[in-house]
Length: 262
Length: 354
Image (cartoon, rainbow over all chains, first blue to last red; front, side, top):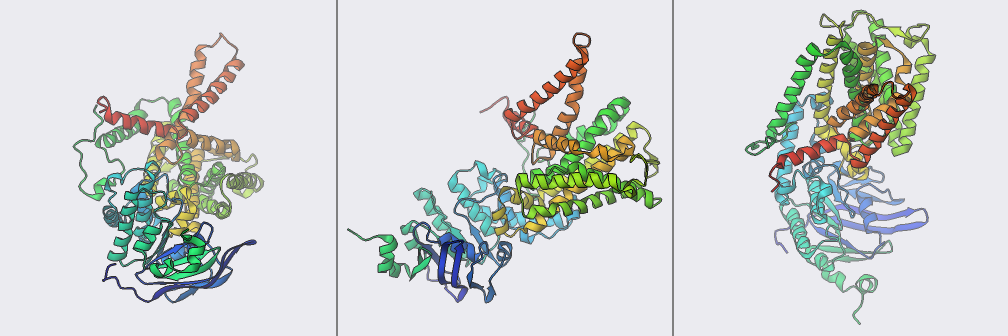
């Protein structure tokens, strides 16, 4: 663990969140907090409500009860794009890249909030329009370098293998310069080397940019290695919260998820 | 063998983001434009100009408009002809009611009116998608056609519903010959095509494509859905509106709601499907296919004249036309523009594929 990494105050606080879809209770009375600069893992069996929790945090779902407080601001109903403006970025479990666009264009969409040129300037490719495009291109190229995907920058993402698509999706989220990064199973379906690369990128992002990271992951080895804290969900309820070692020995968690040694 | 980019190195992001990054493409497009602007008006017959080339250019512009909406922003529309009608009638009314208004200004205003109407009919797109949205835009088609026929004010109470256009001039140059009309149309279309290319390679174009490819993800990365979709409707309708006023003023010389019926909307939709959805070039290729192919078939049919009856001949033309459309869609569902792109990729390696 990097000794320089300073875990700060609570930045995001979700209190008593309950989310229902008709009769299905996706989340029941969940409270969790995320501290600045930490890597928080959310684990749990399938259907435990992990992805729903991320969707609540970045405003895609609106919980029936409870509130989310981000950097001191309470919000109950908020659209996803406003959450994005507040600095919350995410990747999806099933890759949600823009298939028809190149890697470069996909990552450029993450810089959308930095572009302010008017329609006319854009139509003429003149003044602010061109300046902004070139300025953001430089920034995006830094991300491309960071993720080591220079060779595919002009390739349509639909043609890329799965592991690289995941990496591009991380790049698109990073382009938003998020303060809070939500990663939904960033390593699902990857081989060992790809997982190692992805872990390295996640830890680098956390170290170099100080980005707070919340991630959902099923690979226990990865979770225990890279996270500062682990929250365990089961059937929409929180059954564990603490440092990886603590959680590993929590009897509820073992019963629900990790399984007992026979 | 000559189509190579070897030796052409980009040393700045500016050089890397130009529209035609390969030198040969730039030369080709430049030569094509020059030929279209200088050689064609000097050599072409009046029939070729006003019977083929002007309709081709105007419909390309309308297809370009629809391509922005459907191809780039992913919003299916069957109302393009209605927005053309709005553009045509608005331009006519501006010319009529503001004496001395230059043609170009009236056309731009007409396009803007079409944009506003387009935004109004684009509002349902925030709730409905795909085929359902297409049906909602069909409402625009029927409503606008009805309104333009029903209310005499739009046609200046001309009894037939047909209005004639007097004086056409641009910067003091009268558009009275097919050649001058052709050059004017070509310039308008070229400028607007360039603007469209600039828009789709800008952040706005990326926002459109993001909404098209995956709208949830687009929203999560901070693209406002409302604004992006409505801008697409506005820009698309502006293009259709300008195309409509060109159709009425430059091509027909009259304005008539019947010229912008549902059939026209379908025609424009077929153009982008055949030409290439989500491609500027595709709009032109598709328009060329739809406008030129029936004429070519007709000419070819003339060769058989006498051998078979005329009605059989015209039916045969339709059958071949339909057959070719199906053939192209099976061979390349992404349209002629994609075929062109594949050909270019092959050409870069030919004749040494290793």
